[in-house]
Image 1 (cartoon, rainbow, N blue to C red):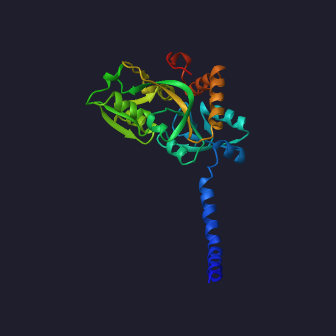
Image 2: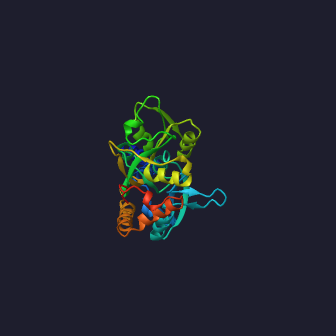
Image 3: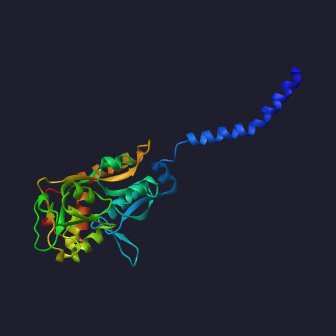
Amino acid sequence: MTDHVSRRGLAAGAALLPAAALLASTSAKAATPAESTFDRIARTKTLRVAGITGALPYFSKDLTTGKWQGACVPMAESLAKIFGAKLEYVEATWGTAVLDIQSNKIDMSFALNPTPERALSIRFTHPMIIHPFGCLAKHGLNPKTWSDIDKPGLRVAYDIGSLHETVAKRFAPKAQHVGFAQQGQAILALQSGRADVVILAALLGLAAVGKNPSLGPYHLLTDPEVALPSCLGIQQEPDNRFRDVLNAWLDFNRGIGTMREDIIAGLAAEGVKRDQIPATLSF
């Protein structure tokens, strides 16, 4: 009887072997970490960068040729060269770049402001620049402080999901807020009289005025002066090699002045002169 039971037990055990092996395999796969950004770039020889539409002087895209231009293009090319990789631009907006990083559509995005909420989802590098905020305003309105636009009858526009929206809601809560999908749409609203003010970080505001002087001057708002770091956004992952390379590249190129010249060249392409760049703009 014992021998009979033993044989049945052996048979049952043998029958379970494929399922056990499958479970072990599945468990091993689940425990295997995802491929790091560093390793993926090394394997595919491709660096995927967010191309932010309508974000001069950082990026602009020639609709005829599909070619990307702007201050961040030579920066992206420099980084791709370090990795021995080709560049792949993925169209994005400031509002979608964080989700694109999270979903592994891109490896990095230039010029993202680190916020605690964003830091829950992605990681940030050392700063590219320390970026003050201000606005474009309708003709006849010459705001100098945030209180000058924090009024119930004033329509304050911004691109949804960006730090422009965050800053507008924080420092002009009494104003009437008008959100748009893209920065260019907010500027068009100002031009057409559907908005009185457009909140913009300094480089973006300067580029907009350089491209279209009829928008009037860019107003750097104070009391308080709102200046935040602008960084590269990357994926959260245990492997720090990609972040370490980016940080070394940022520190080196900022130190030798290459980044400053790239940004100034991007602004100059939009008609902005060096003496129009606020002295408080650090990069």
